[in-house]
Structure formats: structure tokens, C-alpha cells
Image (cartoon, rainbow, N blue to C red; front, side, top):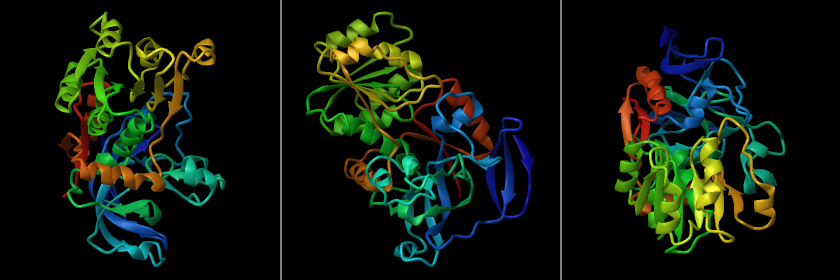
Length: 354
């Protein structure tokens, strides 16, 4: 990692000009009226952070360059802006937050769909179009922030504020009944949480991955069966067999287009659902006849808004949903990215700040 030092707090920035990370120091930011200054305790790496380094056709773009990456963090309040919404927080509060900013939070899209489609067209995402959270201090929007429930530690809870909210709604939005079968595709950073949520909701779970260490993690999280879809040529037949005809829902947390292509073969015919969560580099290709004739249904689930964040976080605290984390130092972020790209990571990789 290249280093360039200025005054202030440490942070890691991505620069598209050389497609690299640079560790530098910058002044501690000041919160605006509706913002909170947070001392970051924990920031975790998400696959969409890594997508900055690779070509993609899914609309993931930078709004500024260079940019501090990271959109998943927890920390403690240092000070607040002067507005009413920010005044609801106190210095020392342990908080988590989401990354959408500069949107209105009041239009139908913000309330019911996602802030990305805000009617103002002004939405920015911290970590992509604005500076994110792989830094010691960050300003966040008070409207997207909540005090952590009892039992959640800001040093370890960061993955819940993207991966957790995403996994929770990816599972819950399938609307299964207890006892039905769910296949979780990708048992890593998102999937290991999805398995915990699914089991807490009473579902039976098949875990699918291409890495044996991720499947071991899936077993620890409660998966009833696990299969390696890379090394086991008969995995689709086995999934259909153990589920008695196919999964009632397949939730795909991966960025693999092939895993989407393979999914229809393990969905219960005429009754099953494919839940789209992971974003491959290439657009998905679906058989229109399958959809038109009702072979299976398709649905999507996003990474959350301030309106559906709280239920996911409170459910996590109530059911002791724990991200399985491995901690690194800020200067080790390139190593974290390398481990993610090589499928050697277990659970979620985080940077913990002193």
C-alpha cells in the first residue's frame, strides 16, 4: 500500500488512477446540522467494496476520486450537529449507521424502496460516491443512525450494518413458513449471517459454496446440509433429494453469474423463489418461458434503509446473531481484499480501531 501523510486521522483511500489503496492522514471532519461525528470502532469489508477494483456492468461507479472506501461500520458519537435530528444522540453513544446520504428520506422511494431511487436524484453512497468508513473518524447522517441495542458491541457489530441488514431482509422477504427449506448460496460474509437468520426464523437450511472453509462456517452457523458446488458434480441432485423436491427459496448472496444460472435446478418447481441479493459483474440471463409458465418466481432484496434497519438490528440482538469476524489493522486492508478475492476468508473481515 502506498502511503501519503497529511494532518489528522488515518484513513484508506481508493484511487482509480492507479487502481490502488493509499494510506494517508486527513483533518477530522466537522458534522453539518443533520450529521454526527463518529469515532469508528469497527469497519468491515464487503464484496461491493472490492468491486471498485474490477470492471462491472452493474452501475457501481465512483462519484469522487480518490475516495475513502468502506460502507459498513459502528462506533461512538464524538459530537453532533446543531439540528433536531442530530440532537437525539449524545457523546459516547454506541451507534451503527447506513451509508446513503444527501437523499430526502421522505419520498415514496426512500420510504418504501431504496434511497438510491430518491425522487431528488441527489443520493450519494458513502464509501463509493463520498468518503466512507475505513478511517478513524467519519461523519454520518443522523437519520440513518441508531443507538446499538444492549448486547451489541461497537467493536464487533459493524458487519450487521450492511451485511446483517441485507442478509436479514434477504431471508425474511422470502416469506417462508417455519419448517420450509431455504438454500443459501454463498456462505461467507453475507451467507453465514443469512444462515443464522434463517435458523432463527425456523427454516431448514442447505448451505452452498465453492470453498470448504465457508461450508465449515455454514455448519457452525446451523446449516442442516452443506454442499460444495465446485467439487461435487452431483450437488444439484443431492439438494433436490434432501429438500424433498427442491428448496422453497434460494437466496443468492454471491457475485457469481454461474450460481444464478445454476439456481433454477434446485428450486421447487411451481412454488419456489429465487431471491436476488448478490450482484455479479455481468447482467443476469433468465429464461422468460420459465418465468411466464411459473416454474419459479424472482424477487430482490436490498441492503436496507433507515426504515427497515432497526427491525434487522433488534432481531440480531434478540436472537444473538453474531458476525464471525477476523480483525486486521488498517494498513492490512490490501491483504483483506486479497483474501476475499481468493475465497480464503471466513465470515467477515474487519478493521478494529483503538
